[in-house]
Image (cartoon, rainbow, N blue to C red; front, side):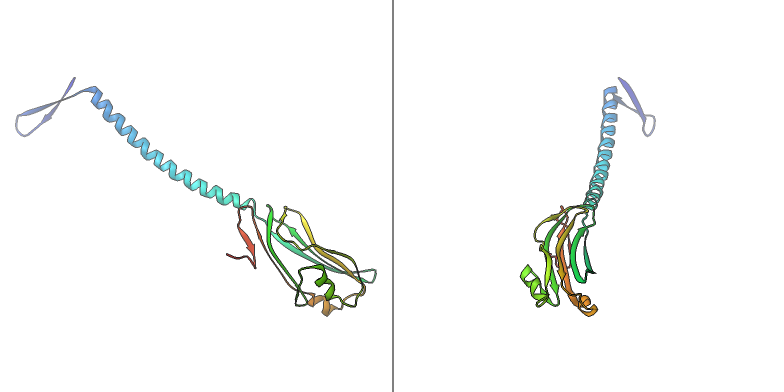
Length: 181
């Protein structure tokens, strides 16, 4: 046992007996207290890192859909096509797609034929994208049509009135003009 002498007022000495195990216990308590504060700091750092990693993960699956309209004259026939390509790094889940041509909403091939009444059509392919997934670098043909006579410049300019779509990443982050919420 060690003795600790504390000088008090006057000549009186006060003696306090401290055991080495008590000193070690106090040191162990202080070390564990320090370790607890360090672990709290590390927990905060890990939480911040997880938030950063979650944001980075969302960026690694970001889809980007681009429309590609082509109008060309081949063999005295007007060729009109509309394609959607995913130029992003992640898949795109198509939620909604609206197409208007000459002010008319197109939802099926019959409405597409109605726009070119009186003209001979050939090589008609039509696929209205609904709920489907478009992989990165995949191209989806909405329609392709050959018209017997070339369209005038005015008709070509006014052909497509509106192309709207809503698509989402695999984390349900949605993009587009017509996305709800």
